[in-house]
Length: 418
Image (tube, rainbow, N blue to C red):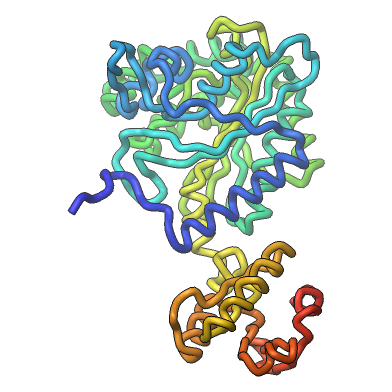
């Protein structure tokens, strides 16, 4: 027997229903927020991720799926979504002569060679948004609040928005110097990865999972104290906007995110109980120009749909409509009943009524069981005698009341009683 690769899973049953529910919710939000859908290739040139995500990040050094294709090209399965979108914006000149914000969103699979655990897979699905050509805090607040509102709308309440500001280049350089001065006497007490990061990317030490509870990192200099006047004023205004939008947030001065391209504001949506990041993002104002494009400021975030599914399974009642309940189950046994049933089923489905019909040779007793499993609200119990009179027996599967309805009026009746 051939099994699925380690770190992957089949999207079936309840998980598949939740996945569709999440994607539908996202799509609806994107229409209201006026974001365009974008899809980029699952694999890209390896260089793209080295230049965007960063040569010294854990993702690039430890987790990417790299290979040489038959044309001797270095290819990498995408570990995140932003790099491909930025490449597409530059390659297709999507900015054109526009002077307004360019807004995109994506839903797709990513690949990281990680140690599999709950909510962390080697093949993962992310939803993300990317906005280009605006450095306004209005866009910052819009993007941060959008992710917050989507999670709330999905029914997830037990999370907090953690935000931080890395500042402009001058602010970061000043902070990195202070950080290295502080860490220098203690560097041998930190993990091997942090010792390497001290030379390559000191900010990533703040994100260390091994030493996060050590006194060394707990007493680390506060990055806010090194922000320039402009960066601090902008950050304070952003906090005012988030408060105005009723976004619950907290400041996390150690939050830096795990990708090298972030600057200025960064944030995460983190569960209150397990401190698990459902997603996060930040500004990357220099990334487009660093890849050879124009000077376009940009901001975006990504969310792990796999992790959101885990959260929803903890909190949603099994009888919730999103997990597969149906409106109508059509019960039929004889061939004539089934012929009628197929036509009725189509009429109902074309009127947005979720309908299922007996499509096997099941007895009425077995069909009643199936209807209960599917939590059908109404049952249409077809029999030849009623059909000859143009009637359909309708049973409310909750109250158990029954009524005979003219077949020509069945759609209007059901629409009025759901």
